[in-house]
Image (cartoon, rainbow, N blue to C red; front, side, top):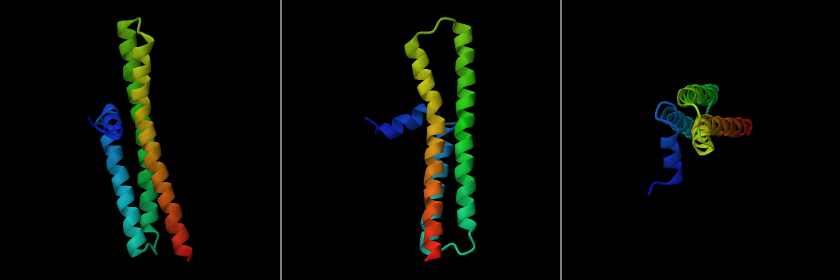
Length: 119
């Protein structure tokens, strides 16, 4: 049995969930690198900021594309049960949630780097 995180990552779809996960790993690596080596010029903070914001927007793009596809399917089929609709909406919400997690991790890293620089 796979952990819940892997199930959610697979449910979110490879097109949007896996790139968002890669952006999360990149943000974490940049935060760790900046904490270890320092970030006097602020390049790491800017890059983390840009990547995390891109992940947020990427997640919402995934949601919009998923919802358009779901509504197209509902239009073709006609009458859809509430359980099927709820499952589709859950999957549509996974991409923006992953994007928000990356954004929050990135913002937290920027806060930590900014706080560390002032010392």
